[in-house]
Image (cartoon, rainbow over all chains, first blue to last red; front, side, top):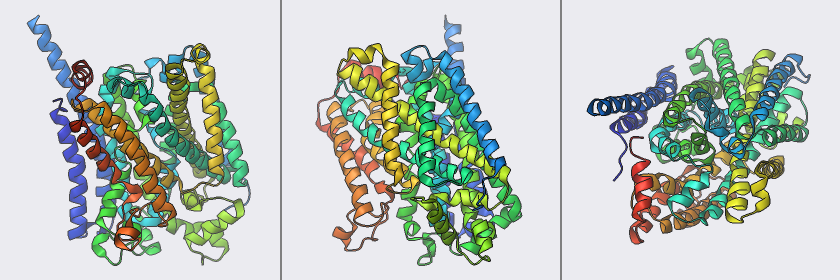
Length: 77
Length: 537
């Protein structure tokens, strides 16, 4: 069965972990009522930084794995 | 709304339109073959493709619709906006890299090849046509609203002008013109939203000012379902509703035809992956700006909009918007709330840049969908299925003809839009994702995915999602209500399931069950799609 690389699951954990943790903190301690808090964790982190970091991870680690594989192939040949 | 036309606003928009014409002209010079027209000759780099992805994916539903929805249902909707951007990187390894490796021309190529049935092109075409009409219509509505803000003209005349501009733009450019222009448009629209948001935050005295301004105009805005019964709005009153909003647009980037075809235009798999990084970077900044504008729009309109000021500051934002609606004959005026908030700044430079950005976001989306639909009809239906010699010999002519016809249909729908632009977008998303998404994702990642499952899921889920959305919208009064609320619970508000988003998991479950019950696909097909394409994505 084909299976996405490990880095894919790490990215999913960051994205869905952020959403679930945010909702839990909002439902329990009402973190969004702290002035400006929601701008930082929903906008700056969850909408901007987290997706950018995950999309960077997805190309950087894939390219690094490919480069490593290519180097190994070269050594063998 | 200021009654006079502002020359500064017109000048900024004129500069943008001249740039579109110049880029369109030079793109046309490079347009030599059908492959250039459909997939830009597969020579688009990561930055250009990433920015083009951003401006194509984001439509007036983003620029006008999302701030309008925060205006309506409050802070809990922010998570829905976060989910849209967060869905972008997921596409990288789920569909983009594999589809670029495969390198088809049309969205339907994948389905016809993977499931070994050319006739699938018919049904996929019908589903894509529904999405195209909704999206082209909402793009034209968005452009017309910005034209109203620029030229202070009646909505219908603005709509006619914007349709003609878009026709020239799409019909003469194809994917090359839309790629380069869309990249430029991404820069314009992202900067426009950031500049408008910074101006508003500056006027309100920073993030703290934003927080209290929002609270003042909308006391329940920061409440969530945990604060029941003091919820900001019925549509954000339960956690099921909040989670539903989160997922409506979340998987669109990985599965919607107008983004998927942009994975085909890149030079190689590395460029496909990197282009999503650039797209996410620009999209994240754009959305943070929209969130800030949306959360403050009520306050800005009530305190600073010229109509509210002229009335002595005693009008609500809704009353101001109703006045604008009456003056210019706008169909769905809540969509105008974002423009009205920026008008309230009283700064023609910021308004001019925002209007240029608004035209940019609408033109690029209309163009993206027009290219998708003309590829489906002129190439897939006419050449591949009907074996038309004429269409084969003159592909670009027929592609342009189809784009022209669909822009005309979009124009007719846009005269009196059936819903807000975000509603039209959400509808198109759910219909397309629940019927075509399972076949796209599972066709790549699950060896057992079968042709019968593809057919049954595409037909059943298309009908179910259309009926569910329309029944909720027409019978229960809003698409966010579960469509059987009155029959099952005797209460139209019993369950809030935005845009009938439950159809996506149902579509996947149906696809899996039918696949397990039917004959497995041929080994060579499995090898090609589920092993070679997904290996080292």
